[in-house]
Length: 424
Image (cartoon, rainbow, N blue to C red; front, top):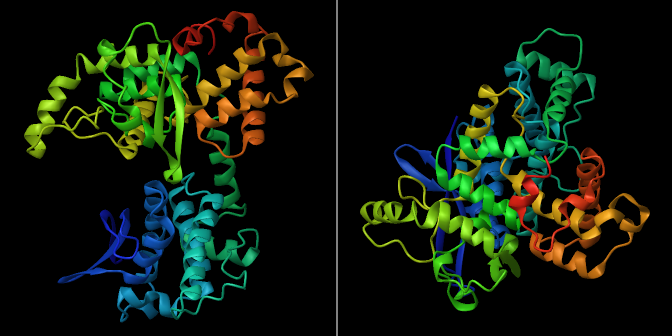
């Protein structure tokens, strides 16, 4: 199998005369390292607005190209020319191969839904190839790139490749098992406290708590500065902030490079200062300087124990590791917990507080435009109605689980730490 890597690059676009950032793909063909020009042009044109999207698309296309390299007809072809002879059948076979490997390993992932979504990314890439005038054998107007895992011939192929001899549908069984493991409600109070104690590095517990209080995305948390600048110049360590202010505005460059201004409660900034900035940050800042040969810039606050700036992949890895350890120590801890659960906590509890005793009545279904604006802006969502209904349902489930005791969380000052003592 060909070794294909993805790498994030930053440069000034000659066409736009602006700094851009996106992932590129390279193929290791001894003794050369080859840039895959066509996929990289696609990643530049279609994904430079979002690092997260760029990483996702680059990863999926790299996975597909690795599969192509294992097929006989690609053996004598340069990886830079794979797109020329790729067909709809290749995309379909890739989907079936992934499910064959999954069945042989008796693994929950990737689900057929994930396989389909990844195939859509590949199909979108080839749609761009066609539109841009490059040669390819993929027919965009035909739906033959989709692998139908309900067809007997497809299932037979998967079973044969996976070397399993069973009469039932192994893919459907594994999909059902994966679905059953997905979290269907908020992370519990008990699990939150367990997770905070289990993290291998204190910085991740601090970030989890911060997300609980603000609903900020992991990628946005990593951008939070030690000292703000521009419109965020008032963001300082808590010890230097005015103590008569209950919340501070903070401008975020979020998903899709969209700017929005959110509210950060003063107590959340105090938590960061008390548990991290005053105690952990000074030593980590020294490690950063020793490692990178320069002082840690004020735009970076969150560093791991080795002095490296925390990124969202590190947050995900640390959380998955901590959840696995927590589950081993306490089987009641849901192994399906993940960092993103922290982002759902704030809007759910805020919804419960906003509606109070009306939450369990039809009156709560009437959308409050002002509240919805606050909710969607804080979350960074573009669909206010869907956001409102989703968190209304979660809030109702939460309150009903507590016997309808809505009054317990109605406080003058909304504080996520106080809510944790009430809801689980």
